[in-house]
Length: 388
Image (tube, rainbow, N blue to C red; front, side, top):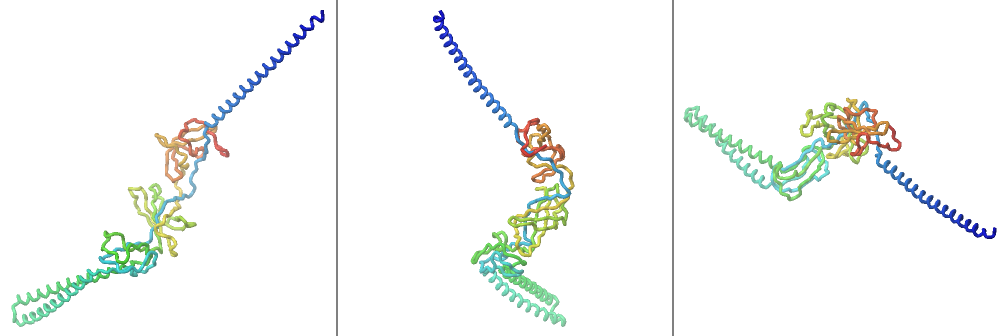
């Protein structure tokens, strides 16, 4: 009987093993599926967190600052020679020769060029001949008048005839004076055929050459020569109207030039004493000694004026401003890393900084270079190393 039950027991054992294998496979499949789902959920969560983190802008902040006891106003300047003259011809002709080229150091009265003026020479010879004629005519008229005055004393001639001789002598004298003036004028014009230096200086321009046709006057073209006195230089700069009241004669300044190390001390020598209505600026002049001639006229200069501070208003960088249709705003970061937009009233503009009359405090953390899309209440992150 027991032998008959053995096959059934074997079949039951096989069925149990098969069920266990199916359960193991099912559990493994469920585990694999669960692991895949969990991995995708974790990746999705990480992506959402990364997206959220990337949507929060990273900003830099800075506190507004108040000016110190002294301020430096930096302005562009224009350097000019102490004296500069453009030399034109006063007589027409052809350039015979030029004697000084650019860069030549000249003394007052040195001849820079000579002009051949044959027309002037002919006119001068004619004027001198007319002068001799007028002088001879006057001598005869004067002698005749003297004789007639002697005859009038003895009543040998009538008074009317004697007066006519006197009038004729006066007319001849006037004609002689006119001839002398005309000859003197032409001699002076002939002297203008020599272009001379009006003062000690350097020839900075020569715009003519031998054989060139020279026409008299400024309207005939560019100047023949330009001479500059560079032993001393003038530096001109334009001060904004908001600083005009602070600039006085004798104020200290430092002037620097491109390509030259260091700066040159100077003082304000004069001001225009008036605001230019077209630029709303005050023109000032500073003078520099230039004994070696190493400072060149026409050079760009950077003028740093030392002016005293007359304001306690805070300053912020101009890059902190948000330009909105209703005015200027700044973004202030609070302790919760939330942005508060604050409307500001600007004061004086210093180029890279601007005064703020209202809207910020010295303790505020103002965002530098805020994005235009930044809104009030937005969350931000500070750059590493920065705190509120």
